[in-house]
Length: 314
Length: 304
Image (cartoon, chains in turn yellow, purple):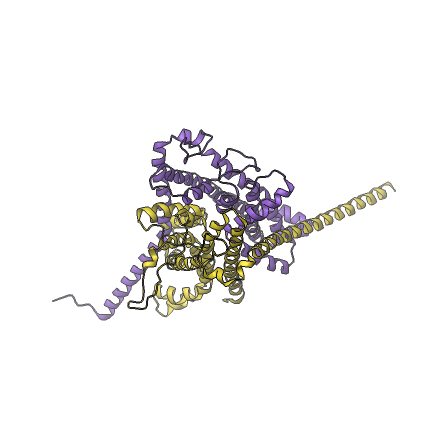
């Protein structure tokens, strides 16, 4: 009689415990979901607000085809767009071949010794160095020691160094995904190491490498701090000399040494002025930057998911 | 009479030579990472060395004012460090709880569809340039905060701190979620078999198992918050104040570097050198956190 009652009591205790734990589960799920939704909503609201602020400017073609100006109404993005494009050319040329080559070395050639260890530690470390430190490096090295000045070349090389670890890490990951069997098959028909790597491994890894390159370039386009540090916050109302000329040899490299401005710098310069009319320009520039970087990142992420889904080696 | 070698041998020799040459070029490319590090460290050390010929290390560490550009110049780094620490602390106080709960939810509670939708969005948000967040801090978040906190100045550390927090949440959530996903399913199954609920499994089994990855995510987030430049340069006011009060305006190390670079300081002046000394302190701070992250990952790593 007594034991039965206590068993029932125990049973009730167990039931209420289960109930409590189920409630905990439910509560945590609700809290987690609402946090995620809250964060995504906040960012969405911020982005929409930015685009709405800049809307009047974004709708006029003049904004994209005129130079910065002392008057907010006339100011435009032209020199920043051209500057960003030219700087990106240098960044691409300096970071991508070097990064891919470094990754190939680390994955395919490096033996397990202190040297490859040192290189690996450096790559991981560089990826975590704040971007403004790259600006200081560029200020000391490119601007003064090598005397490149505050030029498109300096900015491009700075951002190239900045995204080098991104390219290296992505390329290594892509190469690591290629099965050994591919290499063995190529060796079996007499290919040299370089032939195996260049004609097979890298070719299959191209998709993965490309995603890393796009993400790196997107980062370089939006990066502000290192470019300001090399002294690029100046009023630029001209275009660099054209890289292509009408007479032989048709190419002209004077633009490398030209002064420049890029999209995020132009936005910063408008943002740091008092007065709401310039802030409209800043919002419009911000909207352009966001659209470009989100688009590039979106393409890269989509590509990565597709590669992961599609390739099944066995 | 020259040494006769067969065509095939000559060809093989040529081939080997080319292979060696290519390997050497690839090694050079890989060494670029080492060269970059060496260049960063030597530039920072070299310019800081001349800086410390003018300023004693004791003044640098104990003076409570940082006014290298004024006639009455003081070179105490502490006001910049206090600004850096305060903004980073606000950001993390906000980002770590939200990011971790978000990660646990995504990894353990969310349905497959929710996870597959949210994860790419988080990765996408990691790529948003910081200058845009500076705009948010100055023109959207601070005015909003001013409605709730009367007397909050236009330039303060609270707004930028919160915005940096929002900025690193996707990062913490995404990296921690990766770490939790990597915990083998059998551990969860073992826990469920003992009658544990989802919540208990998530908190007592999965989180401890993934703790090295989660802590590494926190530490990288700290490193990012400390090194963050544009948000604070735009919205925190660029005035070195030795204060930990979030309502005050202040400058961080990074904001000071930007501020000096915006002006026209002659190469070799003490003001010019001061940004390298500040940069060196920043580099040491982030290096400390990166090493800490490296060792926590090693120490707490559990292999399954």
